[in-house]
Length: 165
Image 1 (spheres, rainbow, N blue to C red):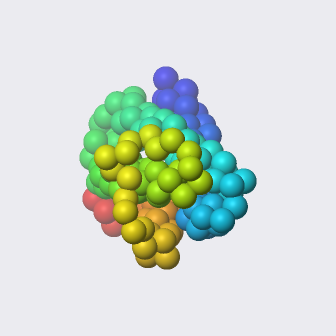
Image 2: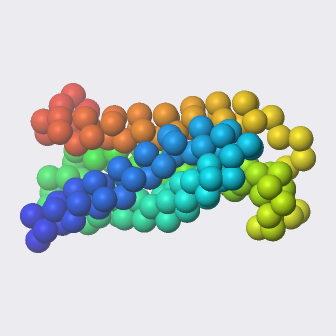
């Protein structure tokens, strides 16, 4: 059971975290370009959809990590690095779903107005968007998300009780 749980955990990390990390990092540039280029608007919409779908599916990674912990609780429950990893993963997941994706949606609504397309949520469409500031904030959040997962990867490969016990 341990091997299957670890395999599923690693596969989920590769399949879901890779695409969402790339989509998050590309979105700000495409959103800025979409102000004048309708094709870039399509790309920005696609990147937002990837961010939403794969961001949600990325929740499977820490959940499968908890499953791995339950395969050998006497070992994994004593090692603090796994508890730290779960906390970091939840922070990363929350960053995507509660900060990045909603702000991407607001920029997409503003872009839809610029291009005369229907707005998904007219009540939340921002007026007078500061495009440069929004892009910088989204880029920073995307970088933090990626950094959190790099930190997690390093923690996962540390030897047991590597000074964290």
